[in-house]
Length: 179
Image (cartoon, rainbow, N blue to C red; front, top):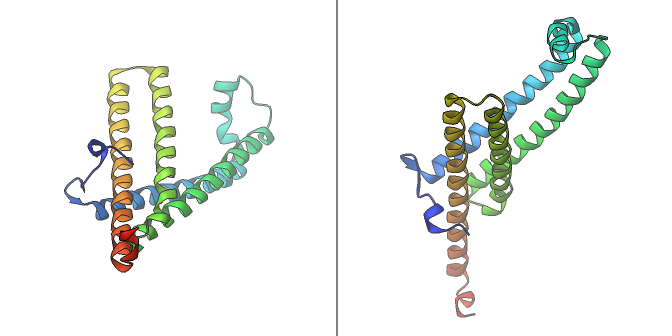
């Protein structure tokens, strides 16, 4: 259970429920778009492999053949497709959990949100150390703030729904309150 100072009663100026739906739909939409872009990457590399030649020569100093680019792009894109599909399913389950007021369906989505946010912060920190500028510092600060706030809101909503469900169970079964 989160400490009281790390809980939220509202999402910006909206109810926590609306905020949870908003956050879930943002993640869901983002990963659906990511899924589509990964498919387009595979299609594009098979249609016009030589478009990658300048990029490949810049970073790898030689352009052997399209087969290596096709293999690398396909492996990366298939991995991203699998991760995107899994993420879309988890966040759809989170949306359903919020709509059905079922905290057990929400827990996987909240934990997945924490994992995604942690990875995003690590990527942002790596990017900051590679290029290091004032804009990078502002970017990482904003990213960390938004990621932590999204997680705190989703976790608070999950705990709120869990407390409501426990209260409803106790009211429905008075014998549990005596135990």
